[in-house]
Image 1 (tube, one colour):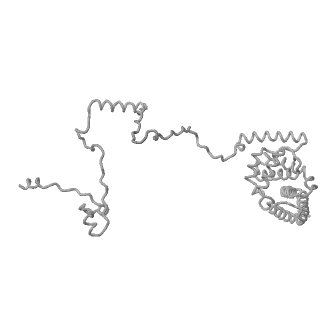
Image 2 (image 1 turned 30 degrees about the vertical axis):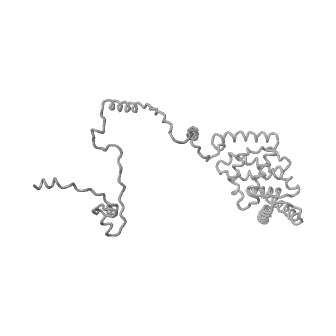
Image 3 (image 1 turned 90 degrees about the vertical axis):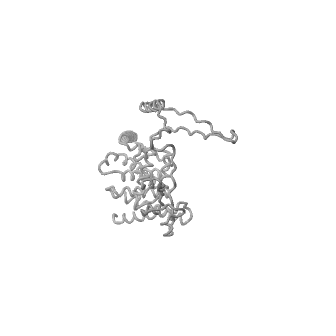
Length: 326
């Protein structure tokens, strides 16, 4: 009797718990719009969206799955193609149908094929500084220096790309404590000298002396004590180029470039044992600045004010170093 009554009872209904009851692990009656627990605490009651299934379920259903011999053979054929690495070419898609005019419909243009390339690695060391290139270029340049010395001519300048790299990476350091000009001004003079000539002053002794002595300062700054003899001949050639026109720079009409050239040579000469060169160069720089100051007050000098006063302060500082020597 009891078994018959149990079979007659309807199956219990399965409820989906709301989010709040799931978190608190409480029994939820699944009422709408709020379950009893949420209604009691006047809390927001949210139910998860009902998941919609696609196709047959995971359980075996004989009426929905066709296990005929043809399907099994086709499935085995596809597996065999995949194992052999064959490429299956899909069939072209059918053209879309639309109620609008076909003339206004067009496919997006195909993107051009981009060839696979190795990503560019930023240049850390310039090409001319690589070991093989450096040794080869140094040997070739020293040969040119020897040829110029044998002919009693000015030494040639280095390639412009090497000088640019050298100045860009050492100008602030070589001018520290005695910056008598800006890097921009020197770069303009460097480009002008290379445009005019790389083997002679080309009519401007002050520019030639200034370019050569600043490059010599940069080479000396970049030199280590160990390999100094390796490029010592190159550094010495730039210094000799400047000293060969020193008399012209001193006895010509003073200009801001001639003062800068004398100051640069004085800074370079501070590390030379013979202090007479330093005293002579610093004194002549101060003398030319005095003449330029008179022209400036008389309105006869046209130059950059910042460069004038920068040269004036450096000349004053070097003159103070000359006084104890004399």
